[in-house]
Image (cartoon, rainbow, N blue to C red; front, side, top):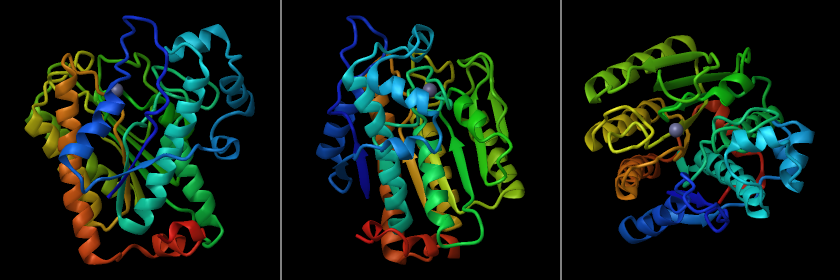
Length: 327
Ligand SMILES: [Zn+2]
């Protein structure tokens, strides 16, 4: 299974900054050591044209040249630097690469990404560009060259924070379904309604969480017929997270991942996942949750490899399109 990384761009954060930038490189090291079946690849950069499928030209330019308005800069939460701009671009590229890979191999990952607070014209909450939104729009644009029917994308966002940017970007779009399962009392304090929002109370544990996920997937099933899944596998619902406010155990987190991967597999839907948030009081707990996500994902990658690619017709059509997707 391929996983794409962009951690060579390390942001120069001020001392004591609360964002755990080291987690990206640490996850890559850990997977290399413990799960060598994960084939870790450097991410390409998303181009301006790809970013422009979602983001406004003015915002793309301002991120590139460091001319963001101070208020937007504050809302993002990272000081501007060349590395910040490059990292954001490559993190989107990682999700695009994972999505392309998933089309031909069933499942693939971005070791970062899931930057779901970013809207069209402004970033927020450590999110600069919205990687999943850009990748979804790109898959749809590529698909449109070979099909009369739009590619239908479901975003299953299990990061503990609501996917407000994604919800706003796709509001009213019948071909993208946004599902967010998140802490009611957590950031963003003003939620943006998506297609399906499940608010969870503080302290929510394994059984309540998994029941809510089950209901959410049943509702998704009733209301939408996806061709492709993006999954935000945030580690921050874990009880060891300092921002999450929920109480999922390691087993509960793993059961969550398995339920989503299995749901997609049972329907033979290609799935690209991004790690999204994870702010363990102890970095090791975040890394353990993330490693467990990859253990489960590898099981489904093996199933895809054994089964060949019995994908839905729309996904098969897409596989014929860009030549560079065939490897
Ligand atoms: Zn989060």
